[in-house]
Length: 139
Image (cartoon, rainbow, N blue to C red; front, side, top):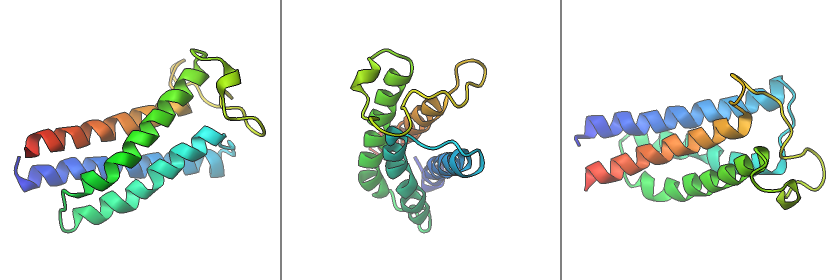
């Protein structure tokens, strides 16, 4: 894969991280939806990606995948766990949310199934898929 295509792939991952960060800030600061504990952990994994991936675009630095992948993997695992809790596939007693906002609080359900935890899961999944594609094409 040539460097121009690599740049566009990495730029796509950066755009996803920017949209995810902006969306989480919109939900908490504009819509006044307080984040639960798991949401905070997912934010901790997503927010640095905006800076890390953005910095790797100018000039293009493909080594960023090595440094950003652990954040994506941890965020993906937390969002997977959050979705399992949210959709009651594991009991709520397994949630780390003991005080404050419940990890299963329903704030939005677009189209009857798109929730905040699902949006996070999709963002981490897409960024991970982009990273995987870049690594496979780079070999």
